[in-house]
Length: 204
Image 1 (cartoon, rainbow, N blue to C red):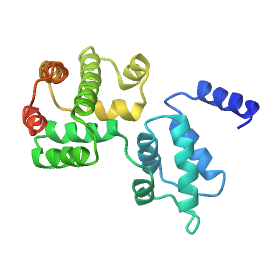
Image 2: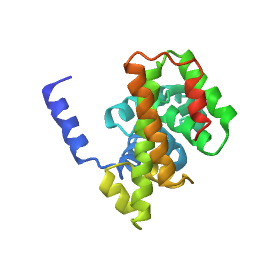
Image 3: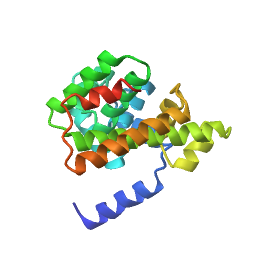
């Protein structure tokens, strides 16, 4: 990649806010004659982890996969853009917080089978719960979704998902403290049983 192109990409990244990532993706797709629905764009941006470079790479991959139909569908995104660990953990915790423990544990087992270790899982869970707590506390201060987005510098879609979580801030604090203790003990050499993370999900 030439230096000029690299500099151009840096300008794009600097100017691209979280709010217009979806519009950026839509334009990049439609300029070559492809079609994509807005909810599919949301999914694509989410799977790209709200990252411009990852989003651009995913779009190029999807354009090749959609050459026959020129339509980028939800199924095409799911089949071709791998969901990142952060999103997987968000799904697991969302299910657990809704008391759908069976599905949550099934998704957790899939992550473990894919080689994600317990330290990574605990760290990702802690990060997600802290984000949920930040959103919850700001909601309790009567901040709007737009205000929360500006304060946390996060994508509005991610804020919206977090704001829909029906759980108290005190319980989120309890869960975060549980994970901090688990992480400390793991790093101190404590040997947990294989199902300790499943037991944690049952506390959600």
